[in-house]
Length: 619
Ligand SMILES: Nc1ncnc2c1ncn2[C@@H]1O[C@H](COP(=O)(O)OP(=O)(O)OP(=O)(O)O)[C@@H](O)[C@H]1O
Ligand SMILES: [Mg+2]
Image 1 (cartoon, helix red, strand yellow):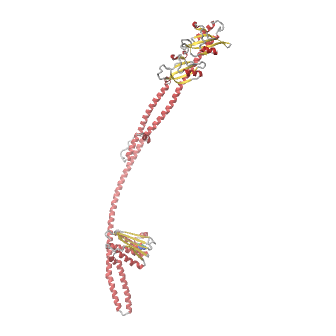
Image 2: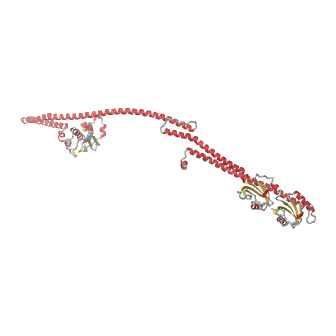
Image 3: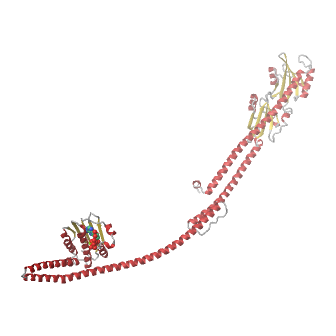
């Protein structure tokens, strides 16, 4: 799985894990920041405490040194002390008292030139020794002020010591110096710092103005220059405190990694010394480090627990959801029989129950629909069968009707032919014979009146002959049998329309092909009815008759410019009251499997188009 697909469209499970992990991460960051701030505060607190301790020790040390300077000062005020006389007895006694009270390894009296006048405890070997070259002595004589010196060498053997000196003056003149020596290798100064215990690695040092160690709870450091001597010397001179971390650079094993230490340094306020407290950072900040370690361990465990919980929560939510998805897919694929197996009253359980109710209802609905569909199909089947049998019956009846119609028409035609023949053979012959007889009677008659009467009778007989001929012609024009369809139509149109003053225009073929008698008769009857309708109803002036026979198709097109009629009106008219001409035309054309089209509008003439297929006929 690529990262893109992981983060692109995260699933519910991934979203849950991501969100919870993000939440946990945020909590851890907040805890981390707050712990970091607490740790820093804790470190600062530890450093502040060290500084306060250093200041306390410095204050004690200063008090001690001030007190000892006072003991020296007391020498100058002791009874009988006078450096201008020769008697050193009172001075010795005063020095003895000062020695007993002070921390000095010895106290002494120097002349104004720095020569030793007397010392307590007495050191005869040094009698008259010149201390004037010692830097603190020089300085005290020069400034005339009490001095507590830095560490300096007092013997050719390299012995080092610290001097406290009080000048004795009179009228602005230095008469001598009272001094005390402090041996750094002794216990005088160490006593001040020793009571303070700072863990396993902590130690306190008293540093002089040059950065040398005057006293230390780490004894091996005494008399050495501090590893930070230069900077401590500066701090003493400028009167600054310093607290922070540093490296212990003066360990013997220089190859070792320098140890990290914390350092709190404070200078004394009146003496150019300082107190330095140092401790390994590991020990000093152990609580902080422990807190840090606890935090990381706690954070790690918390993260693992959170991840496991997140996974568990995601699983407990996602597993039923996945089961629901499977069930929903099963339903979507049409399997409605298997119930949804999600239990419990929580939201997902309720969703499962609702989905199952939906499944049951859907199944019931589908069953119901299935039942109805089957019922509907059964009914449709029944109706279809009924309709089919009805259709079959209708078709059969229609066939019978057509057959009947055909028989009627052919019987009608036969009857017309017979009547026409009878009329021609009997009536027409008789009337002609009657006409000849009348003629003979008229010629033989001598009476004018009879002749006239016979003449009018003759007229009547002629009219009867004419009428009989027209009847014969209407019943069955001989021209149809003799000359064929197109000639018969042309002849009939001229006979029927010309007398009415209607112009006739013929177009198309005047074909001479003979069609089966039945077809010729039917088509002639259709043309006859069309022409008769023009004569009867159209009031037309011009008629165009177009006859065509080709490609197995007979077409008759008759168009007049008469008054036309409303087709709708015709069809709306009640059955009994309307003419049967058009209907008859339609029936005949249908029997020939052709089409009849009548186009007419009031005031815009009428156009009749008859099309009949003639499969067996070729031109
Ligand atoms: N060429 C035409 N011009 C104007 N009107 C026409 C034309 N042909 C038919 N009609 C109208 O259509 C009607 C129906 O014609 P149809 O031939 O069916 O009946 P008919 O001619 O009135 O009676 P018959 O049964 O004697 O034919 C006619 O009454 C007439 O009004
Ligand atoms: Mg008609």
